[in-house]
Image (spheres, rainbow, N blue to C red):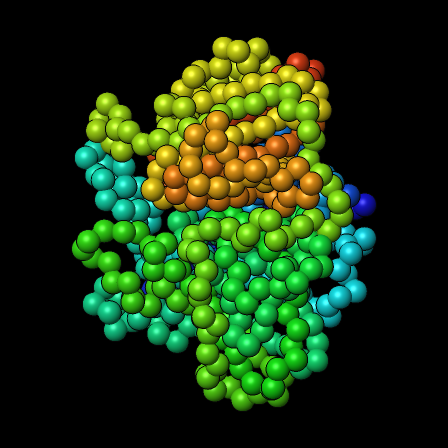
Length: 524
Ligand code: C2O
Ligand code: CU
């Protein structure tokens, strides 16, 4: 194992990923941010220099942070925000492999561009010999307004409308905005090169697909090329017929690796990231379901093909919209059944209500999460006091059984889907189905359920997950639709406080809070 050093300077930078110029919250002036690569067992040392003129933190989505909970990057939960002009070094080892990503966890900053891929290789990856080369593909929705404009609209008292409508979809940071639209303005470039992946006929390619959206669920397809799924969020997938799909559903923060067999005639083929109409925000006005934002394209370019646009046609989309891949069809590569002895169970009811200011908020068990960056709660965590007296406004749930099995039953009474992410763990997705009566759940799969870190609970439905309490720390569990995070759809799991209270907090993490709490130039 080696130590790999990265330096991330966070700055605002004018960029035009879809042709439309806007200020982007960037890492090293790039969007998406730089690719991090490492091997399983390596240590990552990432110095984050914050020149954003506001606070920030970076979360390493899917990374366990064993014994380094304080580098998980969640402000108000695991660290204080990094103030403007300050730097902070994230320093952790990787005891896992697969496809991950990083993003700001400070307010909705990642929607403004602060994202990037993080890939961890494993010399023992069972699929290593099954492909020739690999590509990373990020897909995400994109907005022309900054979230400093969008969030206040979404959170306005009395507002009951849909989430902000994306202006474009980006594939690996490139999109095609219609510059002749009246909203385009003067600085619109209609000639953005679409994301293009060069391949050779007869070779096989691993594509690592990451959905970095604020809001959008996608169907991902490559015309004429079925996708053989080999990895779901760090867990290799068993080679079965069901693991090959033509259309891959992928919700926010989920990742898949697929193998693409380039056995078609030499030509160009469209790569498509499609938002199904039914997954777009619903309202009776403003939304044009045929607007170009519903379909973004990249190009699979065979060596020897001309440079003309592809003429390929899309696979039909006859899937249930906005839902994950059938979890009963995809198996982990190695048999790895969930524990059967549940030691701690939580039932989380997701509901909507309005707060004292008539803002429509989301609740978990009737409580909407409010991050407290000045963090009495967080500082208590940092001081390792008893979890029992954490603020209830912090939606805290504690358990203290070493290596116990935690079961979470998520009941979604809303009419929309929610991609839920658990920090610090992967989980077994043992049930998912319609209905929200905890006494009437769908049958549990205790044999070979899919293992992942982000799973979608469909409308008026439930999910049941299990994981092992093997990682003492404070872990967020939240919907990854960023507007829902801001409106409180977050819980924090206080895992084994007896054990983490014995760990020594690094001095720089403490110092961050001192700096933050004494900072006079907090912008948000
Ligand atoms: Cu990808 Cu709590 O986030
Ligand atoms: Cu949600």
